[in-house]
Length: 222
Image (cartoon, rainbow, N blue to C red; front, side):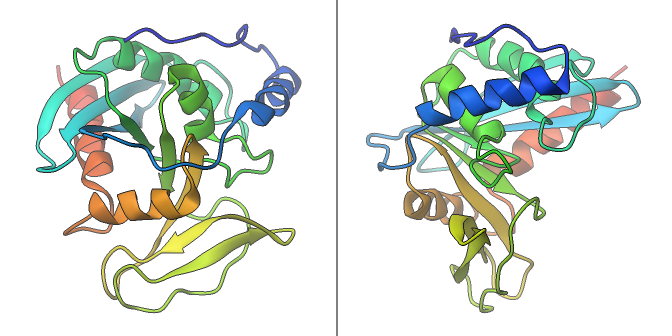
């Protein structure tokens, strides 16, 4: 698959923030993706100054892998909170372009609109690919919330300045929740539904688990 580059690569945090502010208005935070047959998980692992970006594509019904790709490199941007996507996107793009199966939905290990400028990794990759994208994060980045009840599928709103920017979702009973936010071409309810569908046994979606494993294996390979 080929991706639209969208913008010149920034060299400073101010330039990166300006890109996020400019592109934010293009994000569509509604809709239920139709005809989803394949779902891709994206994750990045780090070791010293190296990184491995991995994409694993699963059959949406069986959750079995149908394609995968890895790109090895170095971070493309300095570490700045809120600008983490700029460290990872070049290698994630390389991995996506190596796929032989174009996924129907992207699940990012990170944020969508649950971001200070409402433009996290899932938003950025959604616009780059033109595909529906959601963010499923392990930890809170911005906002406040009440703790969701303990049963599976329980959720509470993730709020920032009174705005609902995501959901705190319990994917397994009695296990720490995950932080779900829409990225592009999908609504929050639909993003939560897909997160639950992709996490039948574990806290994290199978997309994220398998992409994480693949990225770590790639870094440890001789």
